[in-house]
Image 1 (tube, each protein chain N blue to C red):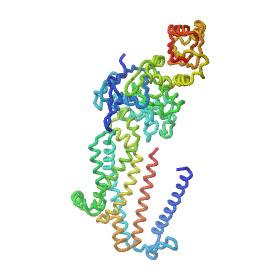
Image 2 (cartoon, each protein chain N blue to C red):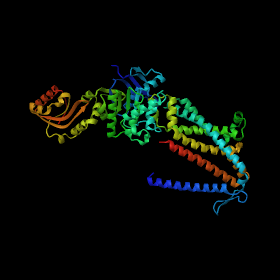
Image 3 (cartoon, chains in turn green, yellow):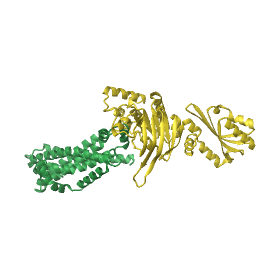
Image 4 (tube, rainbow over the protein chains, first blue to last red):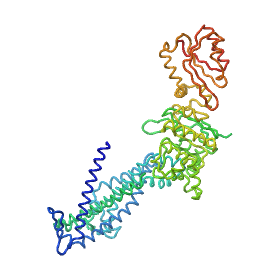
Length: 269
Length: 346
């Protein structure tokens, strides 16, 4: 792409981003500072007024669901990252021509990941109910949602890690081998350190993905924002609830993405 | 004296992909301590595989490798890793750790070896001084030029005090000026630290500049080897001639002359290639022959260079005159220590 067209797209993106930011901020300010007793109408300009009476009415429920979502995202990310990094490293190192080359392990793991990734999440949740009950003691609530979320996220994140670590210049691995580093040292000091920017990119995508999955987990009794939006926004036709949910999730995703991009940029040289 | 590196019957066959590739077909090689040994070949000759067999980054399918008296081929993984620390290696594309600063790159091999931090810092700074980069210690590799990157790589390779330094096409990605600088650095390291250096390259100019001995590889075999002066003054294999031709322009000149002799030679005679070395290059051979035998000698192309300390000259000449006089002159050349090779009648 030429320099001038690059600049054009950058400007365009900047303007679009700024517009979105202003819109979100505006509604946020309105949402926080209006007085619920006499004003339940959110003014988004003269032509567009939304009645947010229902959001106000259910705000305690909203708060509870937001916390549930954050809990689900937090726990799921933490557990999935451990497993995902482990499996991602196993995938990369056992691949043909890599330091711990072992075709059977690679093939089996690769196929299992493909299998798990091809099951739609909503079906996976149902499929896992007996196992969830045995493992967590319940299949509902945040506790019951975490197990299927982890099962769905680990393969996804393992692939992200696999992709990130595959990008590492094989020359660096060769140099490390020539220096007499053990495979374990190569994994920790070269793969995991030099691959950090790529891994953070993968983690960002994964967390955003988990946020989307938690919304689905809600529909099977997991609680969280998805549950809130379905119960109030959809089943009771409170459109403002749905819109509020979307805005909150949008903010959540924006924060995650910005943080991820910032970290990635900070760490790549 | 015990050789620093000894290879015995090294064979390497890559299987898979349907067809077996014989990268190395039986290599025997001995490299003495303190040598700068050049291994030259076109791409695909197997030279990179060969150098990787020295530190066993590639395990040879057959044969034995000794480095500094230790046979590496029968060592276990742990012991082998320990031995690798005394074999430094630098690469064509530098292979620096991109996420680490210059300082951290050089310090990299010293970590987890039980060396106190203070001592490590001293050592790293000393190495950076040697390669002339102490003021770039906090730069990342992406901020450095190719030559600087290779200097960092050299400092890193030296960090574990290796006895041997393997250079795999280490100047092929650099411009001529930077190549000179890196070669000078290698030469001074060899002189000051006594480190044995193996240089893998496809450029004869590199070999000519720093190596004391060389081996020419073709199709997985060493086809010619020896002291650099001997090989240059008396190449036996066509491929060696081709490599030498790339640095002195001899073959190209000859080709051109043969394609249109009339343009180059005003007189009929015999096209002769003269190679002279040692003391004979100091003598006034041409005028002497001309006087003594009454023949005309025209010089079409000439080249004198110094290899190490000894001068080496080559010339393309046309000897014209009486048949017996020319024959007599050719005979006299032999006695003077000049190799004369009749190429054609022109």
